[in-house]
Length: 483
Image 1 (cartoon, one colour):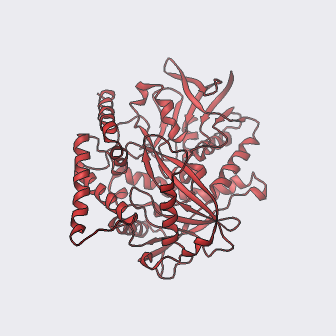
Image 2: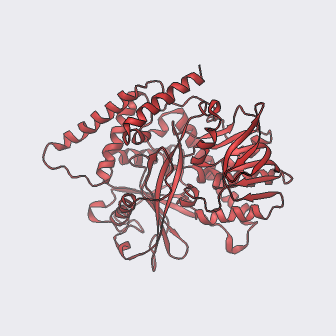
Image 3: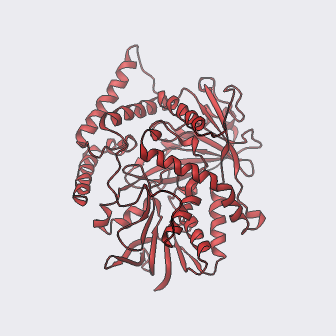
């Protein structure tokens, strides 16, 4: 058995950033970072790595206190990136430096119904209210966009302080820096279970049978965290359950590109916007789909591939039909049952969680890694502790609000997939059909205290016979845990 001061379970952006923050704050700490070298199904490796705070704003986000708290975290994270990258690059050879590509163009077209209009307006309102600089652009002359005529943008704005990094370069850079530390061990493997004795964590067990002893353990395994928690059922039912937001992204090679910044839509149906950005060597990254599932997605599907490619060619650049395919990527965003993150200590002494961050994990990794490292060393953190892991699921919607918002998402999904209504009058029947379906879903769930967010309805809708009893039982267990 190997012994460490801290085991960080997870080698994505959050796990690596936490390990680096710990090693900087106390160079004598013996730290093990555990995760499979290939990161199969992980969110970080497939991410576009948009450093988007205002670009991610939605109308529902700013209506609730938890939503505003998440936005405040994003604002703080965005301010940390330049200095944090400078520190990382100071420990890397020049050829491995990670560059922040500044600038994001947000455009809105008519492909996704009213939800896109509402979220575009929310982005503009938030930036205006908080003094974030932006510039409105002529929607007919957006650099890098050459869409089909029926997909032309209606509006566009430029956010100069947002942008992106290359996720693969970032992960390589963080890995190399940690490898240079004599006190940090990178272990190719996966944590299967925790060792707990008398209410204290004492280490972890790996899938290959190895054991690692440690007085403190950080679970930053993304969607893989849930299986580890399930080994401790009394603890697991006190922590909002984690599901998978499966996403597909695409890399293309072009002779030259006019795309100089991130281009993206506001978040659309089921909380994911179409986006593209330049990469080194005349490569372009495009993403992403978002399919909520009970289990992680390890490979993409032809349906997701077709949908994403069609969106890119129609809404971003028709000329990309002549580009060369570099590859498809599949990843899984960790999405909690209330869509809010899990950050901080648990009632098991020495056990910490850093997951459930949905689309914000890589973006907020410099902030959350330093925050958790400080808290683990008994110091004040960098953010308010609004999302401690052990809590009742947060209700972001009343039942009527959830029904109304879910209808917008389903309608937007229909328009995005090119639905064609066969005759006059169906424009009224189409919403009624979805409203009846959604009402029956929420009625079957029978839940008013913990209202399932619209994003997670797809999990139930895909398999009602199994998932309605699952969620009814889950919420019953939550009530018992908090009785």
